Image (cartoon, rainbow, N blue to C red; front, side):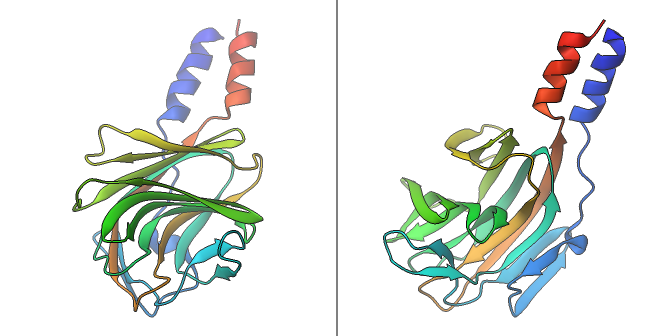
Length: 215
């Protein structure tokens, strides 16, 4: 029984969810986009964003988001390359339950500098940033959903990842997971998403139960 449990755990933990870019769907489809060589390129819609209420006093929910819906626990990551031009140009991952509950995270151009940015929204939005000391040609962003938390990481090489945020997100609830770009102040910009991957993680509570009850 114990050997069977360990074999099952190894098998499950190494299986990637079957997803392809062609099978995903748009929320706020941009006018220009294409999929080639397993990468999504798009021209981000001008004057678009995701934000709710706090600090600025307005709500917007109109930026392009390309997604699939997933349940349970998972890891998602992507490589992002963008031609950022003006303040608040941004691109990254989004995990979204609905218009009042979502996390968007990635890279954002603010006051001439690149920032690692995360917005967490539960009715109202907050914003955390890490300012980089120099421009970067691309960035890797990874999010791991475990139980009722999402850990967000960044990397410059897809090898060493550094955590930049831990945020609450309701567990046991389906989540729309995908690629987001926003351009609140500008007239749009080009961004490319490569190596997008969602990997299933076995339910942590169930694995702990199985471990305790293995014979």
